[in-house]
Image (cartoon, one colour):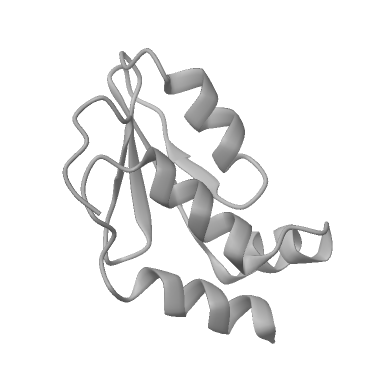
Length: 95
């Protein structure tokens, strides 16, 4: 994956996700994250979400697969995802 400046997400290695509110794809990103990420902070320009074990487990219990969650992040992230994110999601969802 490469840098995609039009995407609204920045996925970080600590499992936090920054979402640019002023991005034209903000609503799409917000709706896509809602099933598996918790909103932590929502100041004016950048909202912070977090992938927690509970949010990921709840998503899996609702029928969302680890692959779907990883794909969602991959298609909306501005920068390549840190290498630990996909294995973390897979591990948490598999328990």
